[in-house]
Image: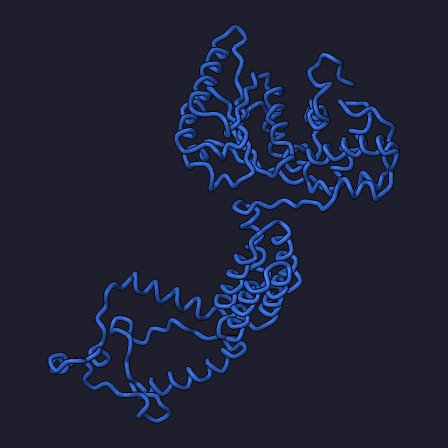
Length: 439
């Protein structure tokens, strides 16, 4: 059905005109909306809780909120957390209460876009009305609700994760948008080459809104230029933009993927995630710092040279800048991925810190205390200390250095990998000598 001239959608952007009007028109999100999927079950049962949709832009969060209100025949109110405050929430509550007490006794769906932008006081203002059912709250966020919503509100909401649309879903949407149905452009399927639609779907990077904006612009451009060449399309699309948020979920997911790829000895994956982060605008200095951390945390003494190489790569980036300096960081990543790994020192340091917290301020053994004055020497400071360099193999076997409460505790357990294997052999020998001397 093509919208009439007075339906409020005829002059709206294509993305708005193509907004689904029933659940079966929604593309993607099958994990939520297919028969037997969680959200579909809730909608069909009529027992719809307050909820939050978490996902990237252009995947249908607002659309689903509208369809939910339509499905339960509820009044649909919408607020943007960027502009709204507690006063707007109170006005929405007052209207919801009036609707509930009216002749139709209708429920109210309050949709709050970018709900993560509400501060704690604003989120708290919603609590009693979500709790008593005055509002059926539907929030939308591109940020992780675990971090951005306070615990009290989050405990009252069901979280549904919306996924990016894949290329096949976007291609189906674009083909539908070309036609005259559902608010489309009313054009023949061959108005644009299939290769154009495929390229637009790819460039949209999972975002339906972006795909439809590109389609509308592509149609106008091809008409004006009387040109349907691939070169014209590339001028329109230009360099595609991948999703990336320098302070959000994508950022931390990708740095996590980079770190774990190095730890897992996969240089190809490490290079991919490095390229993704650079492409998205991440600061190479931040990545260089994290790469250096990887050398100490995950490579450790299995390959001590890795630490120096990473610092050199960081320094090279500072001297060369982008893009040349990025190659130095890439080289460090490949090196780290390929060398033997050990987190033995990382784990040992953590264990030592835990012991400090558990045992408190244990006394330094008398024989290894500093004794710079006669009084301290008379009190026994430094008495019976054995100077290792005067002992065989520069090792005073059996001498105790830990407090009595931690005697013979082992924090550092070296691996047999790389250079650390030689360290392990040496420590095993020295520990054996100390044990023999102690017995």
